[in-house]
Structures are given as C-alpha cells and as structure tokens.
Length: 272
Figure 1 (cartoon, rainbow, N blue to C red):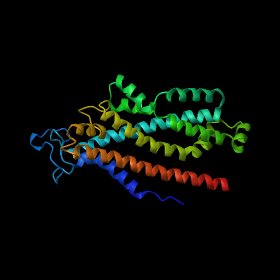
Figure 2: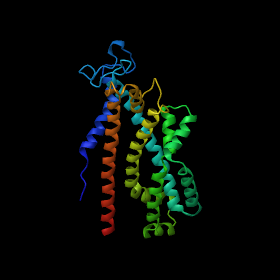
Figure 3: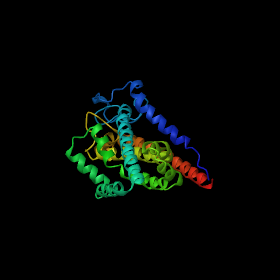
Figure 4: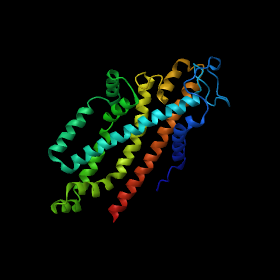
C-alpha cells in the first residue's frame, strides 16, 4: 500500500521551524528579563505558555531555545550523515583494506553505548552549541555508514558498474554520477532520523545539566529548569517537552514516508 505524504507532520515541522526562527522577532517578550511579580504564572493570553520560576515568559524562551535545539539537530545530522556517506561509500566501493579499516573503526565506536560516550566526552569539554554539534555528530555517524556501506556493496556488484571500471572511467565520476543518486534515498532517511536523534541527545544532556547552560537555552535546558517546580507548575516542563515530541514525531513520520518511497522505487527498478 502506497504511503501518503504526511502533510500534518510536515505542517507541524514547518510551523515549529518558523516559530523558532521568526517568533522571537515578532513576539514582544524578552526571554531573559526577570519579572518578580510574574513568577510561575499559569498560561494566559498575555503569556500563552505561562512563566517560569524567575517570571520569564516561557513562550519567548521556547522560541529562543528552539533555535539552539534545531541548530544542533540539523548541524549534527549534516556532519554525521556526511561522515557516514564518505565512510560507507569508501568501504563499499574500494573494499579490501579500506573495508577492514571501516569495520575496525565502527566496532571501536560501538564498544561503548552512544549516550554514555556522549556523557564521557561532554564531561571533559565545556558545552556549547558548536561543541555539542561536533560531539553528537562524531558519536552518531555509524548507523548511516553501515547502511551506506551495505548498499554500496550491492551497487558495486552491478554489471554496469563493473563495465565502467573495466572501461577505466574515473572513480570520481562513477561515485558522483552513479553511486550518489542511488544512495540519496538512504542518505535522506538517515538524515531525518539523525536530526531527531541529535535533538533528543542534546535534550538529554541538557536535562542532566551537561548540555546548554545559562544564559543560553534550548528545549532540553528549559525542560531541566522545570524539574524543581514540576509539581506546582506543570507548564514549565510540559511545553518544551511538547516541542521535542512534536519535532521528533514529525521527523519520524517523514522518515517513514521517505523510506517507503525508496523501497517502492527499488521494487519498481527490480521489476524492470
């Protein structure tokens, strides 16, 4: 059964991206200003998401934090996906000692669970958006690389690739003209999963106090701020948590749709 484009998920994702990028410019509240008289105000027309324990407008903070969370998510996914693409294509195309080196490197990274490896690295490095992007991408490329390697093996065994190699067509031409278009569906599926995974990783680190620290903010750090008042002010943790859930859920739905299209295209090409 053909899977329809998840328009609702796509609409939610676009809305949240625009809210994070343009919202702080349009909303009149300052996410950093303290208001003693507005401490832990419930959601209202003046403050749709309420205020936190320092009287700061939560909507303004969620929009500002969304910029950081999305930046880390997209930035980490881009770097991790590119590393995975390069490593996977290299191993699948050249094979031999390249492939053996790939297996050793991947096994080395997979020796430790990813999140504990993140915790270890962040514990010794002062956290910032750029540091988190680098750390999350360095610990998150293995899944993409293994998928790309497997598909590269299949492509490399195709007769037309063998003919091109016998004809001494430059390796660069073969990879960019024939490999990358065939690998594009897997790459984009891995990328969308990577964005959601990076946002969740950053949120987990920030929730534990090892990620984004004040005065900067992210959805994870705002969620962490609400721990102390969760019993009396549910909204402080609820709304940033809702943003994380909506983005992750939407990206997973879009990833499923991309994967379904890739599978259908492969079935169609095999039938031909």
